Length: 468
Ligand code: NAP
Image 1: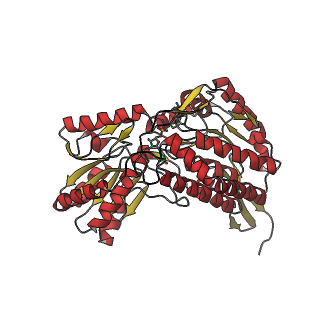
Image 2: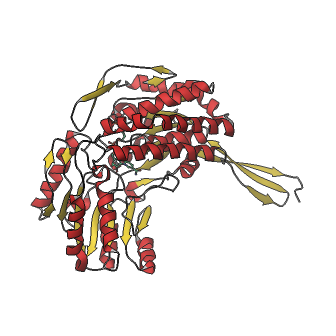
Image 3: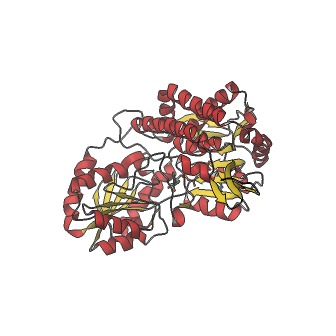
């Protein structure tokens, strides 16, 4: 829909407000041929990006950050309308996005290699962009997760084709307008950044299969991620996928901290966060006290209109998502899960819900992606570690204990990309390496680490020279 500096403005797909189900806009649904054309134009422009100086890339990225800053309220409102995210959380997302672009600006000047000594010379490595990045993004952080691909791609000197989620495309369209202005102001041809809206099964699939794409950078579900591993052919891929993230709560922990951190981590964005708390594994002796504390904490959460600044929990992204989460709650109860709190639904809103379940229950096994907290009692630390690892996922895990030796032992035994000590799994800052193991993904984001993924090392060997 933004190809070679031209906006395609067809009204093929409706964009729905998940809270009141009103229409907030339309986007074109590009055909496979249109997607091919967008990719081919970008490929023709990729050397322009490679040749940009570090200070030019710095200038582009800093100017994008500044323009996001001056449109902060407007963009936050768009995220809330489009993705149903409570406005205070949308503002945090916009702030983080500004930081992501600023970090990339810094690293654009730090895009460097190293040297190795030789008997008769020196080896120099330099980093070079991979070329054309195909970025495919999900709905749940519709601005910052786009930034986590576009900003490092620019810092490393790559051209980008972006396919934003059609469930929440509006924030990325605002970002595209900003990038258009900045590129124009710097005299850079606009074909270096093309945005292809439409159905993931068509446009996303073309990005994955197209031979002009040098690297696919994907964030989304395990199912689509797995299909990418089969369809991408001979190109680099990074995958940031789903999780069923355990929070292990041990009897020697600060229980109050565990309660507050887990409730905050579970109900952020109505549980639609890849590092949301998937399940609590708690030592039996403290379970009842924990449940009482969690219920008290949940009662403080305000559920409702994402545009209301007091709202903590908004709707799920679509009716299908709410139907799915409601069905999971019902199935869990049929399998013996005990409903402890919540369970109600209103439109796309699922009220905060907690259940006590066993490790065979459906809620122990899947990524719920909704405001539902399954609590599972365990008899020992070993059982908590075993249950944590007994899953196809491996994104983040949290461990609550006041014994630092125990915490480090557990951290090293957990098969996860990140382990949080005395925090729920729901924590990320934008400069840290971020990603999963097992089916939660491959490769790392976090600006510096994404720049490494989006570049190749070239080794230049100098011989027959005398370097003392
Ligand atoms: P999704 O359904 O997998 O969609 C993600 C993106 O893939 C969308 O842009 C989608 O396009 C596109 N897509 C769909 N089918 C495709 C195909 N066959 N080929 C290529 N692209 C295709 O995920 P979602 O529902 O938006 O997001 C939720 C999931 O993302 C959860 O599992 C969550 O855990 C995960 N996630 C992971 C991270 C992380 O960093 N690890 C962060 C956020 C979210 P359309 O929607 O336009 O069809």
